[in-house]
Image (tube, rainbow, N blue to C red; front, top):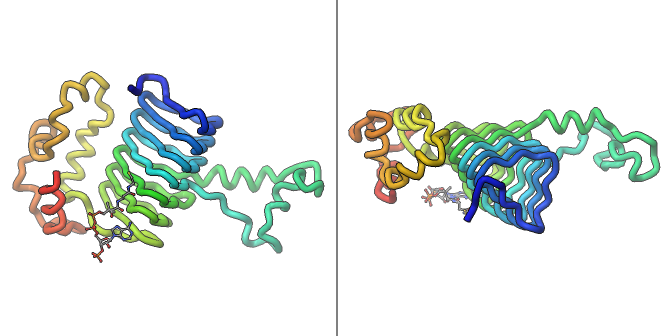
Length: 225
Ligand SMILES: CC(C)(COP(=O)(O)OP(=O)(O)OC[C@H]1O[C@@H](n2cnc3c(N)ncnc32)[C@H](O)[C@@H]1OP(=O)(O)O)[C@@H](O)C(=O)NCCC(=O)NCCS
């Protein structure tokens, strides 16, 4: 069982990173200069660098978050220009270049799902509740509760109408203490009663024709719940 200490599998590599409670990092995954908040997990063969990941984030295997960019404006793309020491071309590596990479952080919100084999490009922000389909390349920000997929990723639809998205974000259940989540565990299995109980929103609101929302798709999702 997971606990207050992060569970880092023996073949994972972590460096200068923060891990919240009930977090898990699987084998052959590297986490560098990043934060992984409570209950989030990163499966096998992932690479995460310069990223802030919220709570309850689900990151499938073979995901790459923030792949490093090479200096495309220089005469060569090769990394010897910024890793001079490695090749005996100088005593100093190019700190400014590395700093530029560090500044291009990726931010991933709470309750997100990053599908298998996806790549999240530098500077991208993924909103709370969003889904990235498997094998996607995400080059632009993803809105809260948006579902994106493809290369480059595009909007498939939103998980819920705007009103529900707003309500879920107001409820911000991801900030509830562990004991509260435990007490309310069963409520997480029924969206309608969850919204009513904690957001005072009744079910008829689900079918309003909100911008960017495809009602027939959402109904399908709701029947799946
Ligand atoms: C994004 C996702 C959640 C959508 O699931 P869904 O709601 O059942 O979507 P559908 O199967 O109805 O697909 C809707 C459309 O998106 C397309 N699509 C779905 N996933 C896609 C993907 N990863 N890349 C590109 N297109 C995708 C479908 O082909 C379909 O296109 P169409 O409307 O032209 O026919 C799902 O496809 C996915 O990628 N899940 C991630 C699975 C995963 O990586 N799991 C790892 C273990 S946790």
